[in-house]
Length: 416
Image 1 (cartoon, rainbow, N blue to C red):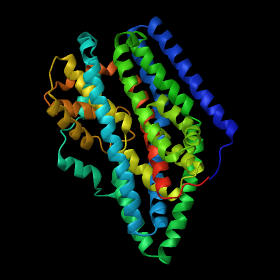
Image 2 (image 1 turned 120 degrees about the horizontal axis):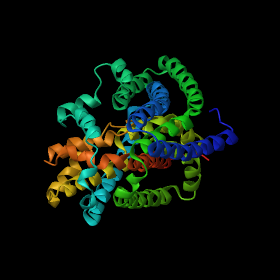
Image 3 (image 1 turned 90 degrees about the vertical axis):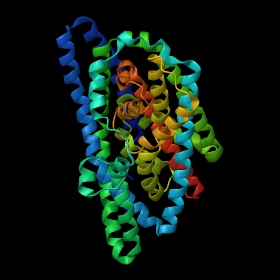
Image 4 (image 1 turned 30 degrees about the vertical axis):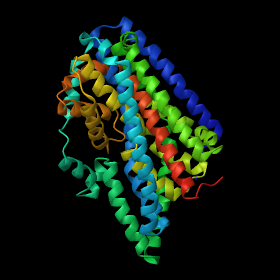
């Protein structure tokens, strides 16, 4: 692996923090001093910086997942090993997802944040956009989301889950060919190194992406958004803290003293995910850092893409939290049985939403309409959603880094 010198690494982290602060200040200045049309055009234009950064990242996701996953599976060797590692990963994913959904459900029932939401603050325009993207969840659509009919279509639309399915077949077939397959593995290994080198170039755009995202939100909403929604955000952050505590405790029980080293390694990816609200934005960097931490490349290449589809702990917790808070805001009582059904539906609907900023909201809208909660209630939580998204995205990244490290440890392939 090509190591980025530690100096440039800490510099990038510093630039990102500066970009966040300057973004808040710029956004606030525009919000206070500009006319409504100016604010809208400023916000739309400055967001282009974030769009450029995220598009550059999306450009490298598909080739990276394909090349690293095929190499990883071919190196694991046989179907038995793939099944064993996959089984351990899924055990972690399902447990973590259920715990996250339950924490969200318990907290929202305890704090009742929805009752404090002022119905007049709804962002109806934003909600319309999201509801437009919502499609009723059905088994049919879920299956289509998982199995690709064309690998090129899956790569073109960055459907990570479909790319994973194709890569697993491709990797197992490559391994089965023995010596014939080795030339392909060698070629794809070179490709993955080239793409990781590209990652370093793309990451230098991160501070601009962060500045664009933050200043656009503050310019449009102003700082008053924190005043109205303080409690909603506060209760959600309490949930995130509980979730982090549980994840880190389990991580510590399994990884022992190595946990500290892992957190040091993933500090920068966590910060970038937090400030750009896209876990996809750090996928390539996270791959690199986990390998440096000592996880075998074949395990990282297999588990991380799977985790991005199946293991979004922060988003999971937010989905139960937000859906029930909207019901509370409208004064709709939902009994415990229905809440548990909702939990299981969310467990399924949330698979494969990785990397899309705000994707959890689309799932919340779909779930609300399924359980007769007005989906336009999303407009109530939209003003503060960007800030909730920062916390849930960072949590998703932490959950996947832990999952990869823990399975590496279980497989006795954690070096260092």
